[in-house]
Image (spheres, helix red, strand yellow):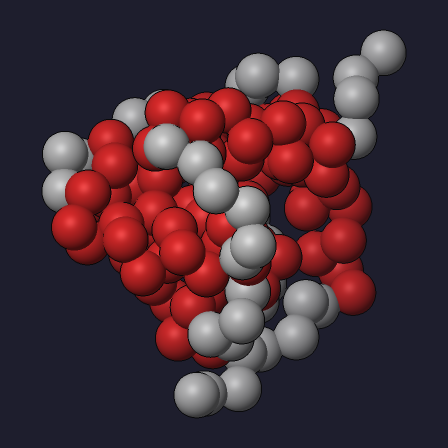
Length: 130
């Protein structure tokens, strides 16, 4: 496990705007904002990059970002769920099995149910627009 860089204080405004853009359904704008930050490998920036890439269907980019997050913190439930979602969208459910098991915990769900549960969880984590 490697130590993830901290979010730079000057990055906070761009990251807040990126999170708002992602919540409002503008993942391309979120990616543009994340690209401007001083610490792009900080977990918050990496998470926003992963989620925005996933929303755009850029599965290899999302996979790389989620893998980096899991490498930095193997207990990061959001990153594990994102990685499982990437694998399911890529059509490789066997690769999704372990991150899916960890993300679900005691819950039982079919892959389609997992995608709905994760979407709901993400919606509750992101701020709602005006």
